[in-house]
Length: 525
Image 1 (spheres, rainbow, N blue to C red):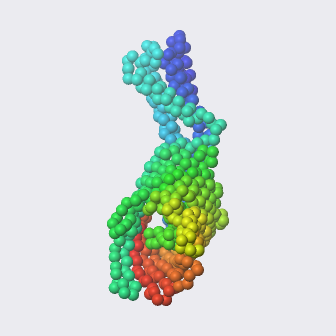
Image 2 (image 1 turned 120 degrees about the horizontal axis):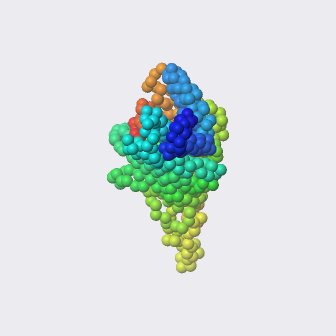
Image 3 (image 1 turned 180 degrees about the vertical axis):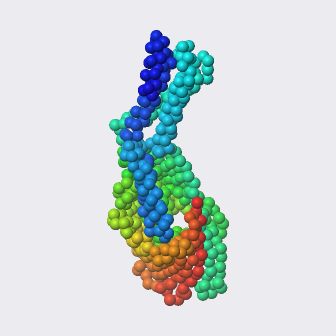
C-alpha cells in the first residue's frame, strides 16, 4: 500500500497538481489502518472468549478421560487438543483480556480483510487505466460510473465499521464486560415406569404409568438477569394436571462480580435440589426428605446465593426467606415466614480423584402452614364452667429441620452418599412436639472401569439405596426401612433406564413387607 501512495504522488506531480482521487484513496488507506489499530486495541484490552472455549474444551476432555474406553479415541482427542492449543496460542495471548465473542471478533476481522480487498481492486483498476486519471475529479471515474458507487459504498462501510469498533473500545480503563446476547432455551424430561407388586395379597398387581413430565423454559435476559419457568405434569385425583413447579428471576448485581445472585419467586429448596443431584435418580424415587414430606421441593420467597470461588468452584452458601407452603398448595395461611440456611463445600476439589466430593448442611426454621387465627384451645381442667380460651401461637406449630448430606465420589468409579434429616414439629398448644428422622444412604458403582472393551457395559452402573424413616422417635414399632437395588443403563444421550427391586420392611411385626419390581425410564431433551 505504501508503494501505491508513492505511485499516486508520482502521478500527481506529473499532472502538475494533486489528484482528488489519490487524496480520497489515501483516506481509505488511513481508515483501514485506523480500523486495524482500533481492533488491535480492542482485542488486547478485553478478555478472550477463545481462551474460555479452549479451557472448556480441556475441562471436557478431563471429564471424559475416565469414561472413554477406546484409548485410540482418547489419544485422537488429545492430539486434536494439542493442535488446537498450538493454533490458538498466539491468538489467546493477543486477546487475553477480550470480552467480545469469537464470532464477533472474526466478523470484525473479516470486515477489515474485505475492505483491504476492495481497495486492492481499486488499485488494480488504477494500474490498468492510468489515462483515466487526467479526468479524475472528486474521486469520480466518468468512463465507469460504477466505480464511484463502489468507492462510496466502501467509504461508508469503513466509516460505520470504524465507529462500531471505537464504540467497543471506549472506557478501556473500566473492567471489561462480556457482551451478552439474550438467549432462550427450552428443555424437558419425562419419568415413566412399569411395575409388578409381589407383596402378600397384592395378587401381582401391575401397571404402566407416567409419573412426571417437566417442561422448562430458561431465558438469559442479560449478563445480570435470567428467568426460569418449569411446568409439572402429574397425576392428581386420578387425572393428569399441569401445575407450576418453578417460576423465578435470578439477578446478579454488577458489584458482586458474578459471585452472588438474588432469586425471586417460586424456587427450588436448595437442599432437596442438590440432594437430587447426588442421588442422581429422581426418576426412580424422591429423596427421603422429599418423599416423607419433611420439606417441600419448591416454595415462594426470596433468597441469595453466594459462591465460594468462580461458578461455585468450592461451594456456596444460601439464605432464603420462604412462605413455608408448597408449590402444590401455594396459599399462605399465616403471616409467618420460614428461614432456610444451606451451605455446600467441596473440601477435596483440588484432588482429581475426589474432586466431585461435597458436603452440605441445612438449617431450617419456620411454622407449619396453618391458619393460626382460627385455632384456639379451651382449658376446662378446673371446672367445666370455668374455662380459659387460649389462642395458639406460631411456636406451638413450629417446624425445624437440621439436615446433613454429602457425596464421596472416587475417580468416576464409586460414589457413596448420605442424606440425614432431623425434624421437630409442633402439634399445638399443650401438646408434645414430634421428632422425626429420615436417614438415607446410597451408592453407585460404574462398570466401565472393569469392562473397557464392551460398549454396552461402558454405560451401565449398579446402584443401591437404603432409607430409614421414623415418624415419631418417641414411639416404638412405627419406623420402616426402604431398600432399592438395581442396574441402570444410559445407552444414548437423553435416555436412562433402571431395572430395580424394592422392598419396605416395617418395625411393626404385624405388617407384611412390601415387595415390588420396577422398570423406570427417563427421557430428556
